[in-house]
Image (cartoon, rainbow, N blue to C red; front, side, top):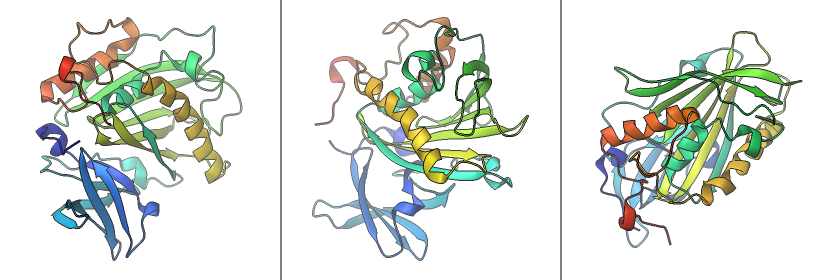
Amino acid sequence: MTKTTDSVALNDWQVIGNIDEISTGKRRNTRLLGQDIIVEMDDDRPRMFEANADGGMGKEHPAQILYGHIWTTLGTPAKPPLDMPEFLEDGRRLVSCGAVTVRASPLRIVENFLDMSHFPYVHTGVLGEEPITEVTDYKSEIRQPDDELWATDCNFFQPQAAMSADDGQDSEYMYRITSPFVTVLYKTCPAVDGAWDLVGIFVQPREEDVCDVHTFMLVIDDVSTYVDLVHFQHKIFLQDRSILENQLPKGLPLSPKHETAIRADGSSMLYRRWLRQKGLTYGTYRGETETRAA
C-alpha cells in the first residue's frame, strides 16, 4: 500500500500513540494512511517524519501532545484537534488504554462505536441484556460552526455501565464526532449525579482496512484501579473487534442504496451523509475498486 491521495484524510489531525509509549531519545516506527512514519521525542516534544525507502527520516510534519496522546498530520489541517475542556476538570482521571489493532475500515470502527442496538447481543451483561433491546428515539444533528456530529438523548439500560457501577442503571449517552476518525462518548457517571464520564476512540488508519484504535477514558472514579479500568474497556472493545473484522464489504458504503437502515441507525446514516459531503473516500466502499491490505 502507498500513501493515500485523499485530501480530506491527509488534512486532518490523527493520533499515533500515547505519550507513555515513547520516551525522550527513543524512536517509534508506525504507519499512517499508507505511509511509513517515524516518531521521536525531543525534550518532551514529539516530532514526526515520513520514512524513506531506506528507513531513514524524510519530510517532517507537525506533531503535538494533547490529552495524553501524540497528534500529527500528513497535510495541512484547517482546524485544530477537538476541544475537550473536561480534561482540565478536577477529580477526573485520564486512562489511556493503549492501542488495539483491528483489521477493519476506520469508518466502520467509528460507526460501530455509535451503534447502541448491538449492546444486548455483543456486550451481554455489561452494556445491555435481553429482553431490553429497544433503542428509543434520539436526536442526531450536525452542529455548526464546528462541523461536529452529535447524537443526544440516547438512553439504554445497562447491567454494568462502568467499572465503578454497583448495579444496573438507565444510562444516558451523548455521542460526538469531531472528525472522521475521532469520536467521544459522554455517558451517565455512576459516581456523581448529573456528571458525565467520557470514553473516546482515536482511530489511526494504518491502511484503509487496518487500524490501531487508541481508546481513552476520562472518568470520575476514585475507587477502581488503573489496571481494572483498562481491562474493563479492553473487554468491551475486544468483543467488538471480531464483529468488525468480519463485516462485508470491508469499506463503509456511503450510498444509502448499499445497506438497509432501521430507525436505530439515525446517527450512522447522518455520519455517512456527513462523510459524503466532505468528499472523503478513504476507508469507504467503492465497489470493485475497494482496496484491501495484504
